[in-house]
Image (cartoon, rainbow, N blue to C red; front, side, top):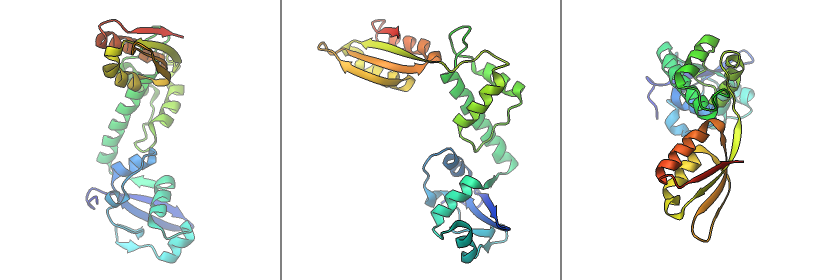
Length: 230
């Protein structure tokens, strides 16, 4: 269970009443992003509060009227989904910086510069974010923020999220060490092993990752891997 000192307040207001929970900010962020969390570890103090700072519990009758249940985890979920998270300035700044790095990494891995066919350098993406004056939300999912951000930075830099399909053939001796890399860079649509043990796969991947795939496979297979855009 997270300590009270490290917890933040999540607040939901309805019908003139306030309902609060005390929760680990990182767990709240993870839940907002769609991840499962350990509620026993995440919640600093079991129950629902009318005013957590004063130690005032929310009456069960008001809780039931507001949420249609007194099941705590269901209530926690609704408060986190529809309520607000009260972060300190330091917590917010740290989480914004972390989320910004994740957004930049996501764009670098999945987008390309259509003028060069390669990915944009991270610093160029960071500069575009700053120039667009995009406000990073520490609690909103990366994919949702990227969708909003791309609309703002497209007038500033050439950028595309084009997907490509690639055929790959790997000799039997190299399959084991290559498979994990292939899986991390692409979605394997189909695969089959040949009589000689070689592996053939059809991949879908961001166009920006194709050069990296060729480099990785070339290194691991000593240049014997075969790749072809479809």
